[in-house]
Length: 79
Ligand SMILES: [Zn+2]
Image (cartoon, rainbow, N blue to C red):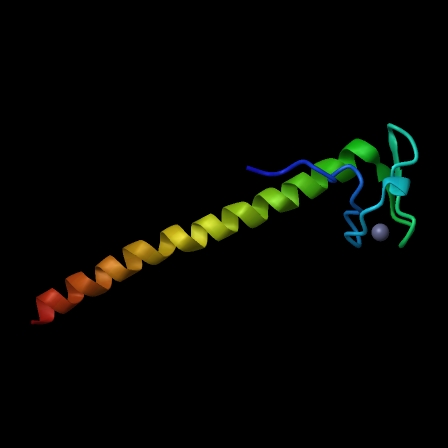
């Protein structure tokens, strides 16, 4: 579900996207903030944070449904 596009060119530290960030296949260095990392590790961190954003969005949605059902059950018992 995570779009891997630009994750190898995006700075994990400041989110700056530039192909100049990716100096070589293995080395990542942000031209904006100077963040340095292994290119694969930087990309993996970007994919991980994007995945967490997707999961938390889905978790928030599915948590809303059972809460509504409990409210309905409670109302029936009171009435
Ligand atoms: Zn940066």
